[in-house]
Image (cartoon, rainbow, N blue to C red; front, side, top):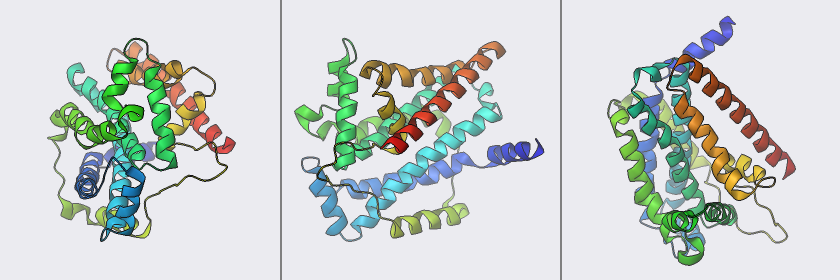
Length: 284
């Protein structure tokens, strides 16, 4: 028990907010560099050209890919630390709600980056996402035209949302929270060195089509959803199922009884999703 308590203490003591900001800085700067060379009309060729022809292009694309992944993971760590020390209870519901909504928005930003690669994984993920949105009654076509519209418009809509739209939405949702943090780069030189070195040594993934391969696993955070789509209709698997977790997080801000129920729902959902993700990895 003492080991677990020490682990939880260390987890809550980490300056998650500062690390998140540092990763976000590198993600934005490297993203701008990559965006200047990217053409949504020819995504796969464009990304391949960045890696092969643009000076240090593979480094900048890797830096953007890994800093974005790390940013999202650090956001999850920050969120978990806030839940463990119950500091979120000091926030009003009006401030808690935007922070919860910012998580799926950040996930959509990360997901858009996979789709924009235009490789086998990105193409497969984009098709699945578009079919999920189209399965929504009444609003499906509107939401698809707002976020994806890949069949009609290629990746232009995804590119605009990834570059501006979703980023602005995330910034508005988190501004009141983010502006409280200060991240001095000189205090995080070890983390920055690791990020730069890792991006220099390990190129960001790029998966061209392979003959005879009919199933492609999606991004790591998409595996559970991809697996549950095998057993449930797209609307229930891709919309209702994820929203259960989001609503459970929202309900954490309430009286003791509601917090306990919401914690139970969150835990069950996470266990189920992890199980589905592992099943997807083993099965494919």
